[in-house]
Length: 278
Image (cartoon, rainbow, N blue to C red; front, side, top):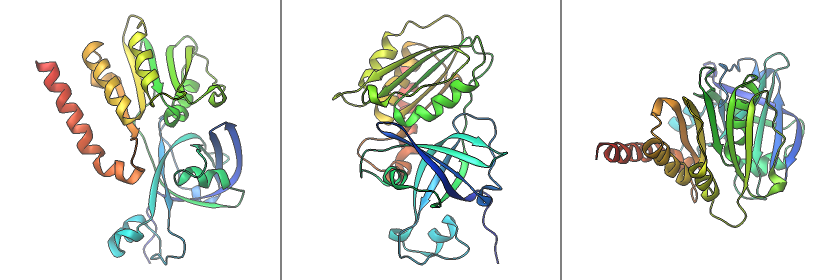
């Protein structure tokens, strides 16, 4: 019998905690995380696997196996979430979820999760950690990027300079963020404005310190595209000093966004290069 891929993991909910008005923390553990390992990045992510109830899936269960043998409408659904923390000694994985009532798939699951619930996941992936030799750090995002921003702040050393801009719906969505760095944290309240509008304005208005910046900018794809153009063309920041990507896109679910994200990113890059060359 074939063994499961090493990137497939089975977590058991240990406890949950409401962090703010719209964010719930779920801590999972268990022997199913024995092969889970991170690489020191602060934007590690996992893909949570949500099989359809009542559907008989092939054993041993793998996402690839399901896609190879089952009709598309029965494929397990995947949702991407940042690893807020991983403790290999206690084998505890912490995930933070944005919850807006019954909207979506993973958020409602997290809101209802109780100890003993099982969650399947793939990963982890990732590609960013704040570079120690940067003169300063720029961390920008909406709620979806908040766990990665919080993780980055925790590893910044004493004396590191960081400008942090986070957009949330209201003051009730703020969280206490721990760091040893000299971090200027600005919470931007969305209210009724379009997502990211306040962030774009705040970054444009920010007086950048001198010296080499290492930037992390993530969240809804529309405002990320606007900020990428601003940082590349108006601020002159090279791509190798930017971790910048749309975590999600307004109006589409995670699966639909993954299907077009690569093409969307290539189109954005092509527009950028044309503007630089003109």
